[in-house]
Length: 476
View (tube, rainbow, N blue to C red):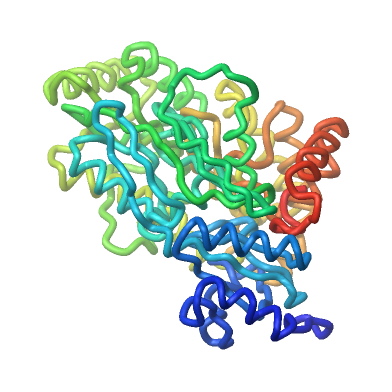
């Protein structure tokens, strides 16, 4: 806690509470506590008030009052972010605005292949609603049982299906946003082609709540695949994985819907610590790939395609071993292995995490150079590398030495971070592929981005939020 923190003025708290009603204006410390820390425990904030509006009008009135009184507001959806973008600071002066009660799916239009959903809709609920309408909403994340659409949009979430369907930004056709002034920008249109001026929605998608409050969005739906096949593949090297990706892309085209790269160490951690996981392959390999082929024609078409690809991969020695899921249950088990993999690193002690992207062709070079960079900081550190190889995004996490001290390792954070990110920049990559900037990478973004880019972002921020009340201290 910050010794200088002070609560908001009680009269101001009551003015905010009157907008949503006392029941939805949380003031007791035990009620507020779940909103003040994020899932990794890196940031702990302080606030006197959490507001849970139930309508766009209430959000509008909250923001109008916030601008009038210069009260900072921190929008929060499912609180599953990993860079501290959704957590208030320690001043006690920021109001948390929870969007969880805005949880209606307003419309599913199967002819336009769109769904209009409010910000508080849980991602898994949206997936299930689309499935019930015989459609696919492809955004898929490990936190999909608790993350919410507003947060997915604000962070431009990625996940395992980006290769085929794109990030959240590419799934969004229109938004409804409450501006800091309380004005409502209603752009809930279903148009896939619209060249009338600036694409304003894309300023809000990925802005992490620093420009306005996303309250709803129109999102793309897709026909459900008629066939889907999943395989686990063992490979001798990252170079072989890249070659397999090239061959698979050439043969499958848009039917390749996932291509996940997994190093041996995260694979072993998952076998050791993952609850209910089953070993996918009998032997051990330096690298693994979890791949998915989807067909709009038939299950037989998907099966024939993946068998053809894997046969060729083994014949040419790109792959050492492979198994195709023989049932829906085994397919689900393969994906479950991937989903529990990130959490399986926790029992191994402290870790320093990186969410990076490089050109797909540079992935083997990154892995080779980054290994040397990590060793220069701590030669006994354990590299835990996995990610979405098909779109160049790797989660390059570093666990402390097996017998090391957690705090001593975390004290190396800045040196390790710089070593890895220097390799990323040398390969024209990005230090944040899908998790955002938040608090974690704000200073590094400002220090290393082109000065003109930083200046333009600050101009945009000032234009939308002249009072500086929207999620201050985040991104820029």
